Structure formats: C-alpha cells, structure tokens
Picture (cartoon, rainbow, N blue to C red):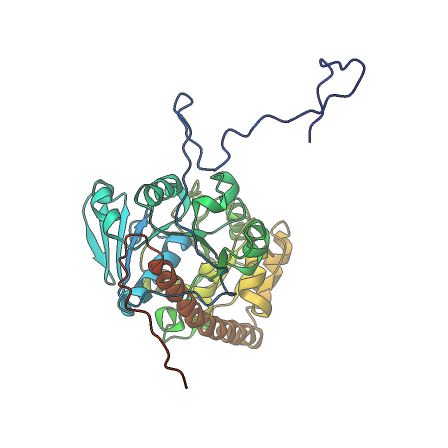
Amino acid sequence: MTPPGPHRVTVGVDVPWTPPARRYRHGVRNHNPYAAHRRYDVPQLAGILGVDDLDRKPAPVKICAVVDRYPPLQNAGAEWMLHHLFRDSVRRGHSVIVVTATPEEYTLDGVLVVPHRDLHDIAPQADVHVGHLMWTRDAVETAATYQRPLIYLVHNDAQLWHWKLTPENVTVGVWNSRWISASSGARWPGQGVVIRPPVLIDDYALDRDPWTAAYTTLVNPSKEKGAELFYALADRPPARRYLAVEGAYGDQQKPGHQHPNVTWQDQTGDMVTDVYARTRVLLMPSWFESWGRSAVEAMCSGIPVIANPTEGLLEALGTAGIFIDRTDVAGWQQMLSMLDDEDTYRERSAAGYQRASELTVLANEDFVTWNDLVETCGAINPAVSVTVGPPQVSSPA
C-alpha cells in the first residue's frame, strides 16, 4: 500500500489512507477513455480442473477460434500449435471454424478458416470459443457477448499481464510449458492445464541421413532470435554453408553481399521440404523461447540442435540439447567443429531423435487432455439445452 504523499499533512491523529479503486479491475482494457468500462465475464467451470469429476459434452463440439492469423499465411510456432490441436479435434469428430484476418475462406486439414467479417455469424453457433495473442480483446469480448466458455492459450510469461486478463475473462487457460504454468498460471490456481506444442515424428521425420545435409540453419534471423551470432559464425572459418529462414514476425536481417555463403529461404509452410531436408545442424540462439517448436521439429529427423539455455528450450530439449550461452560466439564455433566429427554428430543426432520420440508420446497424451477440455467446456455452454428426465426412485430392498 502506498502512503500519502508529502503534500498531505495529518494533524492530531493518523487518518487511514485508502488507495483509489482500480479502473480496469476486470481486465481487457477499454481503449476509449470516454466509454464506460465493461466487465467481460465469461462462463466458468463449476469445479477445479484435475480435482473434480467434471461433466463433458460428447462429440461433436462446435469450436470457434478468434485469432489474428493462421497457417499457412502465418507460420509461427503459436499458430501451428493451435492448428495441430484443432486438427486432432477434427479427427475426433469435433468441428472447428477459425475466424481470422484472411480475405477469403479456405480449409486446412478439415479446419475451416473464414474472414473476420463472418465473426458474428459464426460465434453464436459455437459451443466453445478459443483465443490467444493479438486478438485477445476480440476473443474475450465475443465470448462475453455470447456467453460462451473461452479456452485461452498462453504462449509466454507476459501475455496475461499485457492484456490485463483476470480469471473472470477466461474459462480456462492452456499453458504451453511447465515453466509458463509456474510463472503465469501461479496466479490462476486450478484454472489451467499444461499442453505442450504438439510435434509428432510422423509429421516431421525425413527418410534421409541429416549428416549429408548441406546447411547450418537459423529460423527467423531477427535480433531476438540471434541473427547477430548467426552472421558472426558465417564470417568465421572454416567455410560453411548457412541457411537463413524468414520468420513470421520480427525485423528480419537478410544476408548481404558480404555473406555469399548464406542462403535465404522465404517464409514457408512446408518446413520439412524447404528447411529440415536441407539442414545438418539447427541453431537456436534466441534470447527468449517459451518452448522451442522448431528445435523439436528438427530433432524428429535427428538434426542436432545448439541452443541458448532459455527456460523453454531447456524444458523442450532436455539432455538432447547442446546448450551454449548466446554471447559465446567462440563456443558456438567450437561446437560446430566438434559436430564435424561423425561419431560426435551421430551421438547427438540419436539423442535428439530419442527426445523427439518422448515428446511424441507426450503430445498424444496432451491431445487427450485438450479434447477432454473442449468437451468439458462444451458442457457448460449456457446455450446448450439439457433435457432432464423424471427422478429415479430406488425401490426399497
């Protein structure tokens, strides 16, 4: 509690000081200072996840996602995580419509993607709403307007704070790693589950030996992802071939004439063919990763990964990762030289594939958790009518 400022003088007795009421108490800030603030409360679960035996609505559940971008127009890890969750839901009999910034509708793996102009036609028909990232405000407002349960995906430890979300704004949170759960979810006990970005070996494994590939690769050559270290390595002997893959966000640092050994790859929705099939070693010198999807995708083909020890990469890669501080350029150069030894390379390759196999098992468990969550939220949709039969009376023995 902040005490009164020096301009306030109390004579005789102390006067209790009461801080002013918080204007944006219920989150999702209204950017119009002249408009009355509105509470954005969405339906809540009656019990605590993982504690109570909550009822579930059997398939099919109608899901409406309100998100700013979606694959293959946006190929960042958060969007592909969302899509793979939806793809699995469709396979289990649920229906999914994604409302996003697309000029025309299209279908991807059974998921229907429609323009934002269709939002208020789609939203009232859904049993469950889903949101994350840039369109958080739209997702919360829409769920509150139509009183639909909202599943909200959290991809970093600043997301809840940035959007000023409170438990009343969200039905249940999905944390994309254990450390994000410990960091962000600690404020929302019992109102979230951990579901890691699902990466399946069958989606990313290649029938080729990564030892024979040509490139040392960085995905998203931005300052935050370690472009400076990447180009510093490209400048140093011995001569190597490097691949810079355009990212879905951030200020991209393209190679210039001074880096003839660096090949540029435009943003692609086919990472397997365009990136991993050409990659011998993947670099991830990011200053922040909440998980590290690209690293896990690469390990599905046995590609060794050298990474900065962020919380997310440590959790995702485990003992299979090769961790070096992003400021230690000489250390990264030395490790690349060590991976020129075939025995060392194959040892790290096998470790990466083993870790990818473990994460595939966890991903299939997470799919079950996700669809249980969808069905649980579908059961509390206020628009769902439930027929109650006559009470059952047991006959006396």
